[in-house]
Image (cartoon, rainbow, N blue to C red; front, side, top):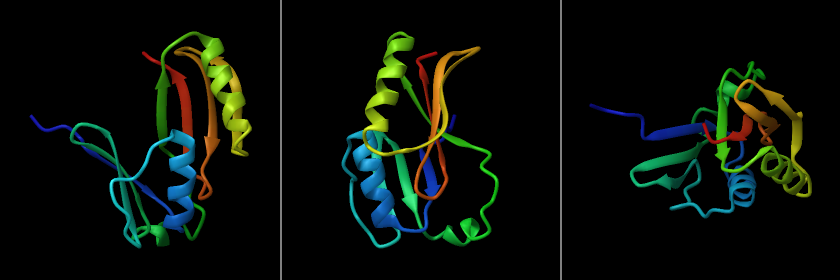
Length: 121
């Protein structure tokens, strides 16, 4: 059975996005190219930045997906990460609030792609 193992995020500026996600997630890319930068997030699973699809961002499309980061711990762990990311100057879409799956918040990357933090399911 096959499972997804590559998650692409369309960006307009690969260098800017690489700096953003490297700092945000405290990880280094596997390699750097002018239009594609992959990060290994688990064995055989890549999270990659791709400017080859940047023309799709030109008209400011609605965001219908999110990059998700599930963290262990209580609601205070989510709030603590929110405070840490605020110190990095992120763009906040939704401040921490309680949802059916637990405490959560949403930020945006420089291209408007959404990043949601929530507790581990």
